[in-house]
Image 1: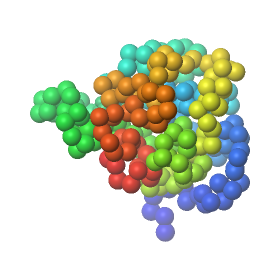
Image 2: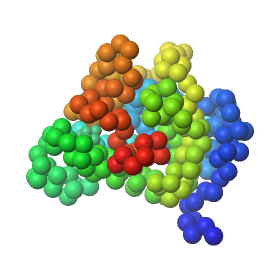
Image 3: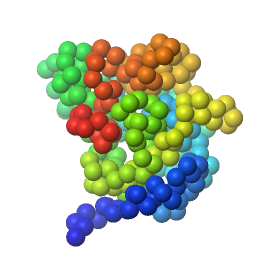
Length: 246
Ligand code: SF4
């Protein structure tokens, strides 16, 4: 018996068949109708997220959108938050890390502990990102992400719909799974929507300022994330595609 009132118990195989090759608009229309206020978009202001933000605000007057403010974001990301607040007229739900945990981390290990080891990096991501994600998803039945299969090998098998086992078994919806990076840029061009200024400086994937660099031609699109590590380029937000990478 389902003990969790938020657990959706959806047949994702059926949903993936039903929406195979469906446009993101169709997927989001269905999700808004199905979940209404129990649906939330994750937005870090990368180009996939702003494309979804644009589509979602075209379908709903008051969609729920959350931002994980790690406290270490690029200045340009805060500028995007500001311009998107104005353009779309929505109040983003901001999740900031717990003060005491950040304070203890800084006091015990300093401001750049993530460069010292994978364990330290995961510790920082857990405090600054993963904790907040748990709070953001604590009261919803479904969330929307900008994951695409072409972003990296670790994401090559991402389905359009999946059950998020790490978060109360809620439904995770990835409407852009089969878009290419060119599709994403083309959507921005066609709809004249705000683009993060780092995109044109060689940052196709944007995270925290000290942990992201521009990529070189031919590199994996997520190669600029935690570039000093050789392991998979994930922070623990999308556990299903990375094993236990928190
Ligand atoms: S990306 Fe870097 S600064 Fe941001 S939470 Fe992870 S380790 Fe910390």
